[in-house]
Image 1: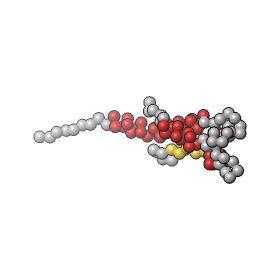
Image 2: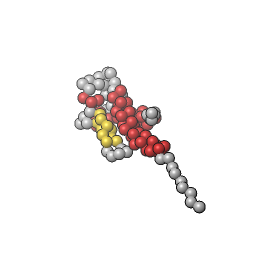
Image 3: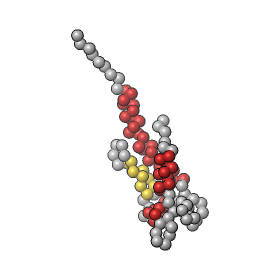
Image 4: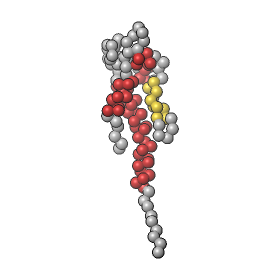
Length: 111
């Protein structure tokens, strides 16, 4: 007696496709949140996010694909680290870690 088992792989493939799309959604959401984190007052109060003056910092925030399942959010402006962590003459005006925490607390939903 022989038993032939057949499986329907469509649900598994659907899950794989959604799983591979999620990191991009997460990175795009992080970029969107970071672009809304900027303040309106310049110079920004200590501990508040920096103000959007020219928009160069906001335009330099991009999501870069590392491999099939990993994306990296990169800030291309060379002065971003000074704003995020401060210097010995300027207090920090963090924006990146706040954006990360906001996305971590409210991750995007898969649609």
